Image (tube, one colour):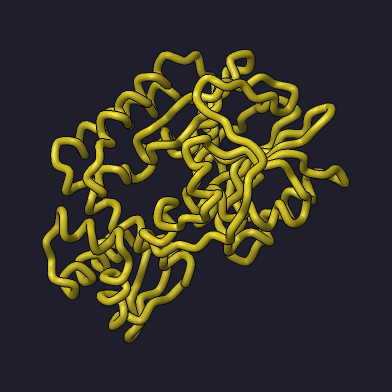
Length: 320
């Protein structure tokens, strides 16, 4: 289905060529703030992969309810636990009472609801507390929509991220490990951990698979896997050559995320906002070395330059 606009109404259909999925699958292309959702309606059960952001939770429940046409949601699966992929978990659990499967490496953090370990506090993003029923890890197999899916490890963007591969249908649910043009911010590198090598290894793994269609975490499904991988390998080479580039990209992406969520920010408050959020603060200290005001001016100017924000009076406004 076409992505939803901020009003909750469908946006205009894309002119991109149509893609074809098995009849037991639907993709809800959400755009930002929410990740895409993949709905499976098997003969005996139903499942959803990833649940979007918390502020879109009511819309997510409505989309899933409408698509299920009176059936319940039996299972919710999270590829990883960034807020835009699991922010609708609590609402879906409350509405459907669904079983929930998360990456095994995140189980203890969810059990304790450690928002620092789960990255929510560090990024200044929100996520309503949720629980889980079971876990999955690389090497497991899931039955979703009457299809067998291999669980593959995909560290890089997130050290615990997983992707799902269906060999019989040549489908990859790639989450944020591979987009049509790149991949998600490589967060481990911002904390001084390794992420570039892991991203490259994940891309190399994907390159070994026989894939006809990729369903990414953001953006429309795409069939030009070779082209996407070439662009992704080129990008990881570019970022790894100078880690400051990854840091700069992270600051821009995270500020845009906050602006998407809030729609407007007082310009005078942006320096303090960035200083109060740990990932901005630590990224600046480790890589950028700018005074608070200078970091804010630089980040705002980058969003303006990309035409994704504008200034009116004393306010920074979101621009799509």
